[in-house]
Image 1 (cartoon, rainbow, N blue to C red):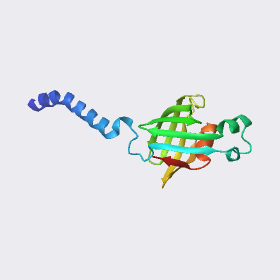
Image 2 (image 1 turned 60 degrees about the vertical axis):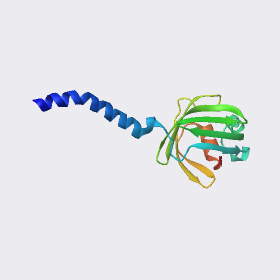
Image 3 (image 1 turned 90 degrees about the horizontal axis):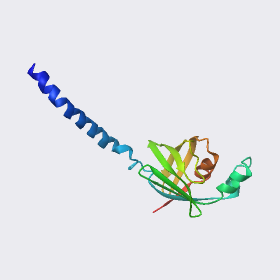
Image 4 (image 1 turned 30 degrees about the vertical axis):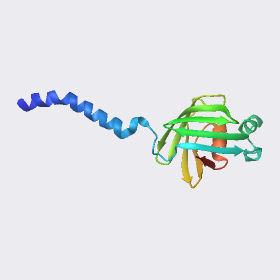
Length: 147
C-alpha cells in the first residue's frame, strides 16, 4: 500500500521527465546535424528543362537559384528575389520539402527526395514530387555548396 502511494506521487513527475527526455532526444524536430544544412546554388539553363516541359515551366526555371536550409526551414531565391519559403524534414538520406509561401511555392504539394552530399556538391534524386518546377531546380544538376 505504501508503495502504491509513493508511485502515484512520483508518477506525474516521471511523465514530465520522460517528456523532457523525448523532446531533448528528438531535438524539437530540429534538422541540425542531418548534414543537409547549408546554402547551395545552382544555375538552370533552358537546355536543362525536359523537352516536353511546358514553355512557362521552362521559362520560370531558368536562372540562378540559391537554396538555404537551416533548422528545418528553407528559403529559395531566384535572381536574388524570394521564390519560396517553407519547411523540410530529414529522415536519413530522404528529405521532404513543404513550401508555405512565395511566387514559386508549390503549396500543398510535399516533395520527397533522396539526397547525397559529396565534396562541394549536393545532389537530389526525385523519390516523389508532384511539383515539376521544384523537381527541375533540385534534380537538373548538382547544387554547389556555399560557405
